[in-house]
Image (cartoon, rainbow, N blue to C red; front, side, top):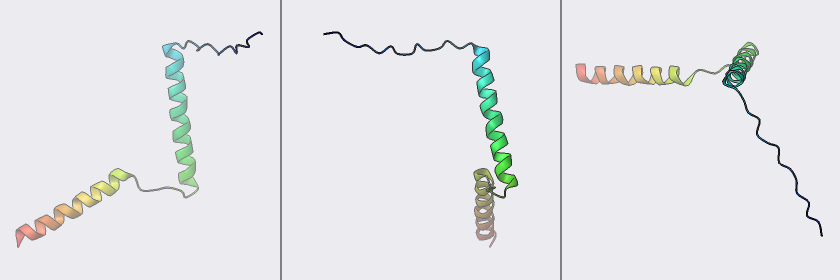
Length: 68
């Protein structure tokens, strides 16, 4: 009886330059997709903006309470 062994693909060695290039390309694609979505009207308010507004609201509320 002969055993069938499937050969696994050997991992491809990548240079630092290739890794950096792939990261840059993924980043560009992400930015391009975000800009395209914004142009189609699919934009959302970033979380940091919402957090800043909440912080301002709470700070104003506390200032109002303390000043009375």
